[in-house]
Image (cartoon, rainbow, N blue to C red; front, side, top):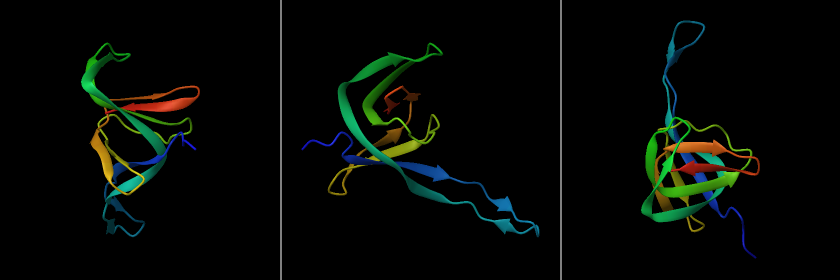
Length: 107
């Protein structure tokens, strides 16, 4: 049986250092976080797309995810982990679109 989203999407998340109620600094963190399931498509040719702000982007991967994807910022580092634990792709987010039936990420 074919799975619609066979892979795992991870996003590299950085948090800033903050002060607690006593004035002590709590260091920030940098870690890969699991953002759920996905599938990917290699554009092979460096497909170009125009965003809402009329900027042309050339992307090499399209990642498709379920509709209820957590918010991902443009410029974030993402990677897709395959079913055997291998890194299928990694790169910087160029565009994100949350559609009616699914979410798409261009890398």
